[in-house]
Length: 171
Image (cartoon, rainbow, N blue to C red):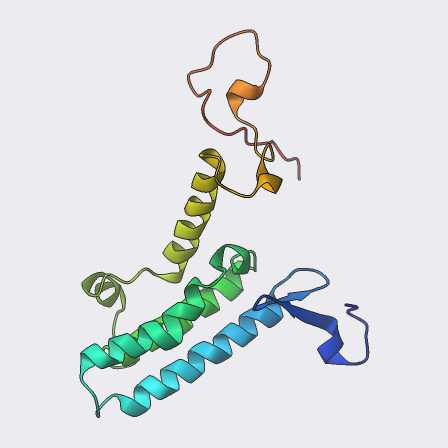
């Protein structure tokens, strides 16, 4: 992977469905995900008046939601603007699946159908990852990566001894 490579296809590579580039910006991965979501929205729109809404929601889950949940912990390392683009594409797909017009608010749709927004999908994946680390069933490579306050050799007891140490970063 080399960003100055004359062949644009050689500037990134795909590993287990996630497209990585030299700087780990995930821009290429985001554009591929947006393309998949756009394709899903197109197909849902084509079937909008031919099948019941229940089928459209099933298509949303099959063609859009499955891509949003796949490796969302890693894919969420992209920029905030890319995450917002993904969220907008998710809203378009949901509007199509619910047979609502373009300008319809989506917050009630997410709530009505119990669908997590992309922000909440990412948050849930991150919490599940930290839960696995906290309870010791994550891969052994993550052991000790985030020490707990109890692991620090302090002279006094802490009320938050079971919490993880958050390192201070000077920017």
